[in-house]
Length: 417
Image (cartoon, rainbow, N blue to C red; front, side, top):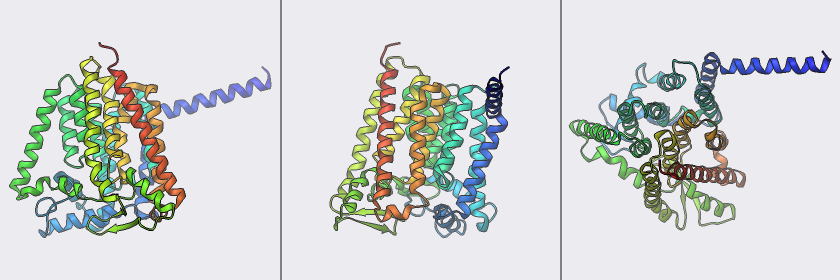
């Protein structure tokens, strides 16, 4: 055999060996552990104070409740639904001094449960392997924010709910409803499941009954109207600097406007846009979101009525709902990008290569998010043109992701079954 042929054969053998190694469960778990260890380390000692909400805000809320001074969401209005207090309190299990470490272990364990269900016990399929590697890579490119917010608790719950949507719709409805009472966004996945599932009445009944039960327990604890206070708290927020809508005002600052500024709101601990039209834009985001959600809902109902199977409809419909919540949002915090995880993971499991475009777009959005936060967030706060451009690119990718998902929902119902 010629020397060149031997070299090609050896390289082919090595390539097959690498692919075989990466195809195994051990490699996936090693990747999972490595990424979580690195992200935990970045949260604890990395630059940019990415863990500030957990150690500086959540811990204070949990400690004040532990001492009987103030229970957020019960004794006072709160920005989060009432069940968000459960993981925040659980992180006190080993004392306030280890609050951050306990939080990271808790989130990692939740991710590990969802990861193990994703891999399954049977022979590992190519699609599940691809979805698992995508999730690991997505966490890596998103950075420490992937673990350092309350949203990180809801992501594995949402993944489990969507993975079990077809075979166990009652369990899925329970998990997604619990997730929605920790952070509101999984309610979009409940809506997608109601539309796509043939057992939608079971989903509606469980979600409604569980929600009533949670509110009833809150009322018994003395919450009163504070049980739903998170709705008013969100409605009263201004236009946050990372919000997609805020891009126009950021470019006005870049252009030299003296009437537009970025100010810190000490009540809700965020940087917000101050300037002509900013408050009006913030007020319009909610009705725009309602209209956009209604449009996606009607498209989903059309597809379901035309016989679209759950496997073809649920993932793109869930993705469309989530992206609408991100785009028509006055807050736009970087951790919102974690919401893309569940529908994309499901889409890869069910659709394989057909979900390549949204998988790539979501990963690119995550990467641009980490470029901005936490390491160089200060440059965005002074409206540096380069970082305003990065944020603009992120918004453009979200628009492209919405266009893809809406088109996929339309195609799912294009031909009557």
